[in-house]
Image (cartoon, rainbow over all chains, first blue to last red; front, side, top):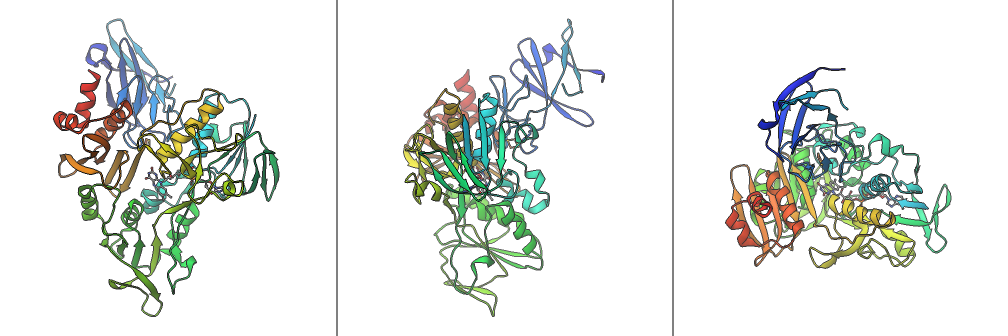
Length: 106
Length: 395
Ligand SMILES: Cc1cc2nc3c(=O)[nH]c(=O)nc-3n(C[C@H](O)[C@H](O)[C@H](O)COP(=O)(O)OP(=O)(O)OC[C@H]3O[C@@H](n4cnc5c(N)ncnc54)[C@H](O)[C@@H]3O)c2cc1C
Ligand code: FES
């Protein structure tokens, strides 16, 4: 089991928005939806574009290249041209609002 | 239910993905007329042509879908259909199905050029075409591309090399007539090709290795035709369900026969955004028509109502178009910088399309706004950007 990595706090993330975090082998988008936080890999399963920069509306992020939409909670592709799921990462939020991420794919 | 799908391209694969996601209760027989597993077509003229030799990188369906137990892949072309009996005939045998979806796409049109055998003219429609083109490039210094639409410009960008001269020949009076003059000018300026318009090709002269045209002789080692495609509607036509214009379907992708549907760029249906019947060749049409068909087959029909959209990569220039317009629609520039260009196409106040060059954010916002309903020119001009207009509509 890989380590939990502290990435941010709940207050530091804008509600209904996302931020990008870069690690050695992977880039991660972290989304805040009220008291919930979700993390997915910043890599579209259609043709490898960055999802960062895509519109995040109603729990879905849209790939800026060809418009595939992904559920940020489950990683599932919600519309073509992507069919495959994007990787998701476990998140835990401590009582003091500190957010931690685990880089193992859930 | 036993469903037969003819064709294994973009529309067929989206239909399969949506049926499996919707927990379709039945078997799916897919007749794939090509020798390759389903692959993506757009990269064939873009980055893949320039940088890759690996067909597996084009794979369309991820593993769990391609090998899903409800799918039986039949690697052969369908020769005829008997819709009343629900029969599909191939050289491997006759198959019985309860419903049939035709997703047969189109075939590239080849011009006839006196002095040049048809086999010597390249087209790019399939993976085999692209592999053949790659093999033919050795030693080639003069490439002539006939046609001046998106495909021609994508090919020019992908084939650009200091050792080659690329020429694009257009029959019409301008290149890229699908987009605004200003958008076309940008793309023409940065294309690694010389472009001639108003060209009539008379013949190919084998001795001088040149195309003889009304613009003089054009040195040519290799010809690629990018002049459009015609619908693969023969199977449907033989049953009285289609014509050379495509396969007519209603807003649920149902043909005149209750056991036959048609999807993708072979389908001919009412486009609500254009308010007319039109066949559209694009990934969005393939995906959206497949989704509509999937919903109907899953028992919760919804009519086709999506807004068409399109993308084209020409080297570093990323063009994305939300909506679809007539070539005569007016054009107004919304954003212009060294790298970005956003053009509004409109009929008076009614915005019909947004062309965004290197501006994905504007494109995404345009798709959302067009999906929400009518968009007025003055609203966009006042907001200063499509994204700002989207934000104000959501607040
Ligand atoms: C080089 C190229 C670049 C493109 N770039 C873009 C782009 O950038 N953006 C965009 O939006 N669109 C682009 N397109 C268009 C897009 O790829 C098509 O609109 C889309 O693939 C259409 O999907 P379809 O399923 O209707 O047809 P297709 O994907 O063509 O699939 C049809 C399949 O049916 C098979 N078939 C036909 N007859 C039979 C039969 N009798 N039996 C069995 N199988 C049969 C065919 O062999 C084919 O495999 C491009 C197309 C090409 C060729
Ligand atoms: S790369 Fe994301 S939709 Fe194509």
